[in-house]
Length: 94
Picture: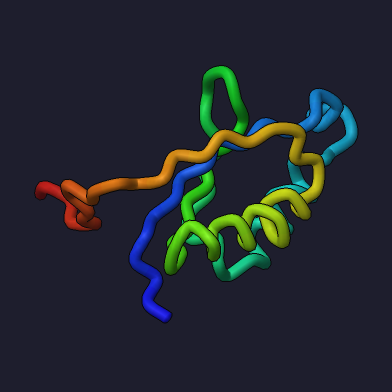
């Protein structure tokens, strides 16, 4: 199946993550999951932005249940389904 939908998720880890080293475990688990395209530690009201590409929303629900919520320390997520991709480039203006 074509993977034609980007989905971006905000991920909040358990509050004990800084104390227990859970962040390192989370990072290692994310790096081992090929379906996670990007993961960024961010400043603000949550911990990470995670990006994946799925065939449809049914595939996203499967990803959410079998992958995202199985990552160590995940306490809360918020999902943003990309409705239209306006610009996507990796080219730097040099």
